Length: 265
Image 1 (cartoon, rainbow, N blue to C red):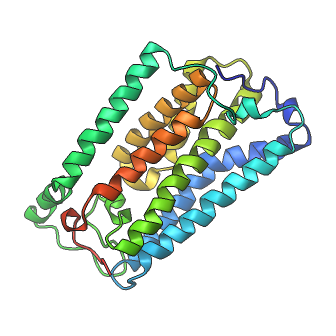
Image 2: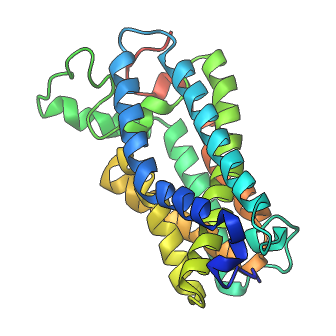
């Protein structure tokens, strides 16, 4: 089980910084993500290196935030590594959480098969049949409602960078939204039930993906809650990191030919 901090005093002189970083994850990250994604989509039709550039920005942003949170943690005298999940699992997930993990793995397998089979093109086709014209150049380069699809790699170079992005998301986002964020929330509120912490983690993670629309917020929110449950039961970020990276890296199995039309160079 995770042994979270019981008071903000545990963070000592780093308490204010811890609250600021945690607040940014909930309020600032959704806004920054939205702005970055809109700019990225606007460049897709005119800039062959738009995806590679965007991947680079994601890597800098996520590792920068992760390192900042790490510095804050290292400056907190009353918080040890185990209280932020930086240790080996202390126990296996319980039956219910284990079942949820199996369901997540099944979701990964089924969704990957659907993606490889061209489900993305089929989902985009109704938009064309309803008579929607393509978005104006300089705005969205992908079908409306398909913000996530714009992120998927098309070329070999993009796939190599996307591999780094997927691993980075697994490591950095689990550290930020489960290990660090939940430690700060527990320190602020004190004595919150595990179920409440799972919901809080899920909501924060879903909001961070607001650029994906309502479906994206709900989907990532649920996955964020699952990762939080796994973390809190095992007392370690290891399994959430592996699961998170697996979920993101499955997109490497999607061939470019089944993706909606867009700049692929």
